[in-house]
Structures are given as structure tokens and as C-alpha cells.
Length: 544
Ligand code: ADP
Image (cartoon, rainbow, N blue to C red):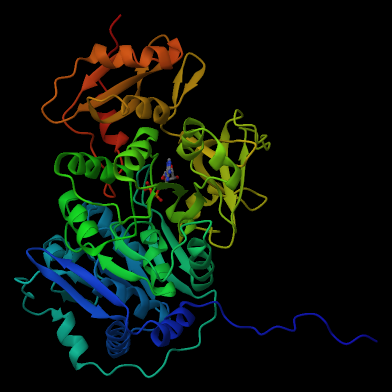
């Protein structure tokens, strides 16, 4: 008889607690900063952070919150928000990051649906919550964080720092199963009603490891990370967790950061890694061109959330010497799905060909299986041509939305998540997001990718932003309408855009008309809001 071979390694739970306890010993001297408008940044060390996080855990205990209770945040990016990021999950509670830019009805819906017990709110955004206070009955406590120097704590509410100062730090952390819920985030509702996603400790643990890999974002102890992605958007791309795991220097962008604040922080703090949606980088490019900020300390900018225009990547590299890493992900995926990196042998290719690769969203991350399927659910080849719905599975992909039986159709019978994105995958494994299913334009039996046309238009030297939407057409079913924002002070004739596109596009894909608009409306997380545009142009009729 042979001795047992099976399962001879320890059952060590993959929880965030491991990262924290290890970091407390290893990174005590490293620093964390938050921008305070009009004042020098707030700074402290990881040792201070650990001490305060333990005090915060003491506060949560004193509030009488049980395991699994939802601890919501309603706040800008800051060190206090980071303390909540860790204290809630490590005590077995669930961190729920509320999006401060949502309209009141969505907020009320989300808070009630999640049944939040307590909300930690920045003073500067408290008035939004004050207006809905009587409509969120599950919330027993609201704690105010003074995010600006002149902030006051309204009567009857608790002040975060005072609570912490008086609290007794916990002496240790409970043992948690790795499948315990750690965090909760609702999709921002770009395409419909917000839906809740619940991250487990295990999902976050594995995601952090993958995200830090050299072949992904290569996040390491050497990095100075500027957190621009709101801590309420898609788990803040998980970077606050990954950055703490590796002991990187954190810099939080603080209340309501503007492009100038971001450029100043990058220059002053010598930031090496940051990430944000493309609209942020479009604005920063414009500013850096005009005012010459030095952003050369950046080794990588992670860009995603919506398609990163090819010309934007090219400009950052040629003008500022900064390489962008184009990534695709979803709130539903903790959020990393693919990361755009060149393979070693591609570095010998000519620059244009390299840019072709980098304008795609990269290949699937380790830990993520991806496939594209046709309308009948048949898997399509990876040939860069066949286009179908992108489906994924993996240890950090959700298996069900929180309490939302109506969304069961987002999962296939064989266990894949239907992303709702339409994509091609080439023979090298690089994914190209053609569009969201809802944004594709169907003209006379042909599909037009709004993303492709937008990216071409945004390469025009007079254009700041462009969004292309489908408008109904009596003969062709739908036609593309290009909504274009000129750079400040520039006059732009619609015909200039059409002529610019003509040599690049098939005749049927060429927008017949171009609307020059003042700004592309943005969603609560800074993406182009095509729902609003479609509504604005719903009565638009094509010229004969
Ligand atoms: P919401 O659905 O509310 O916008 P998410 O931020 O989770 O919330 O959005 C995920 C979606 O964003 C993806 O399904 C995809 O459509 C889009 N997306 C993310 N990254 C990219 C990218 N690099 N290129 C194109 N689309 C992207």
C-alpha cells in the first residue's frame, strides 16, 4: 500500500489578512499621501496606516456590526478610504464602495439593495447623502471624514478621526474562510440598472498576485502609485490592494481632482504608475502640451474602462516618453481581464505594427479563460476576423450577481460569464473589443464598430473628443452619427471630418453627418455616455 499522496499541503486561506500582516512587518517605513486642496499633502507611514486600521476595526466592533454586514463608503480617494478598504474585509465585514456621482434614485436603490449598515462619507459629499437620509432605513450610522481642512461634521454625526483616536485597536484578526465576502461594488449602470458584484477574499488575493506580475502591470515595492481611478469604480481596479500587498508608495488624488492636480502630483511626487479611463488622459495630454508638465517619471499608465485611442497611446509615448498599457476589464471581474503587452519578438516589429497590437486590449490575464461565440453559442476561431460575444471564466470572475435572479441569463449553461462585449481575438491571442453589444451600429446588414470610427476621428488634429452613435434610418435601419468636440478655440467644419475619414473607411461605414457638440456627456466614472447622446439625438433625421 502506498502512503497517501493527495492533499499534503496546508489549507492556508487566501485572505487579504495575509497581505496586511506581512506588510505591517515589511513596509512600516513606506509612505502614503493624500492630496488636500490648497494645502500640502497629508502624509503618514504604513506603520501609522496599520495602527489606524486596527483602531478602525475597533470602531466597527463597537458599532456592533456582525460578520457579513455591509460597511459602505461614500468618498474620494484617500488614506482614510484605504483604511476602510482593509478594516472592513479583515474583520469579516463587507466593504461596499458607493459611487458618489450617481443620481439620487440609483443611490437609494443601491444602498437599500445592499442593505448597508453604516456609511463612511467624506464631508465634501455628505450633502448628497443628507438629501436621501430618510430613504435608506438600513443605515444605522453615518460617519463623516473631514476631507478638506475647513470641513465641519454636522450635528449628530460622528467624526472619523475622533472615533479612531478614542478607539481601542484590535489585537488580531479573525480567521476567515477564503470564500468570505470581502468587497461589494455595483456596476455603474452604463448599460442598464446597477447590479451588485461581491468579491471574495480569494478572488482579490489571486487577482492582486496576477496584477503585480512583471508581464501584467509589474506593480512592485519600487512604485509610486497615484490613485486616480475612483475607489468606488470597479474595485478601483484592485490597485489599492495590490499596491499595499507589494509595499508601494501610495498617493491618493483626494477630493475632486482635476487634470491640473493630477499633472502636478505626477511631477511633484515622481509618480511611476497610475491608471485612469481614456477621457482623463485626453484632458491631461491637452494640458501637458500647453503647459509642459514633466510626467516622465511614469513608467506605465494603465488605461482602460473604454477603448484607448491608438493616437493617444502614440502621443504619450512620442511626446512624453510614457508607455500606456491598454487593459480591458469589468466590475464583474475584480476587474482585470486582459492586459496589453507586446511579446518579446514583437519589439523587433516596426512601430506601426507594434501600435496595431497595442491598440487592442491585450491577451487574457493568467487566471482568465476567454472565448468568443456566435449567436448560437458556437465558439469562433482566433483569427482576428471572426467577431462574437466575449465570454470569460476564472477565479476572480463573478458566478452570480448579488440577489439578482433576473440576471441569470448572463451566465452560460457551461459556466462562462457573458460580458456583453463584442470582440475578435487574433492568432496571437490579442483581444480587440469591437463594441458593446448595445453600441454596435447595424447599417444595411453590416455591423459598424462605433469604437473604430471614434478612434479615427480622435486622431484628427482639431478634435478633442468624439462619440459615434446609431441613429434610426428608414432604409438602412441604423446609420452612424458622429458627435465631435473640437479642441478649445478651434473651428471645425463637419465636412473636414467626413473627408478625413473617407480614405480610411468603407463607404457604408462612413458617417453621413457630423454633429459638432460642446462636450461628450460622461458617465459617473468618466466614460462617454452614449445613452445620453442617443437620447439627445433621438429625433434626429438623416438628410436625404
Ligand atoms: P459599466 O458597465 O457601468 O461601464 P465597468 O466599468 O465595469 O462598468 O465597465 C466594463 C465595460 O467597460 C466592459 O464590459 C467594456 O465594455 C468596457 N471596457 C473596459 N475596458 C475597455 C477597453 N480597454 N476597451 C474597450 N472597452 C472597455
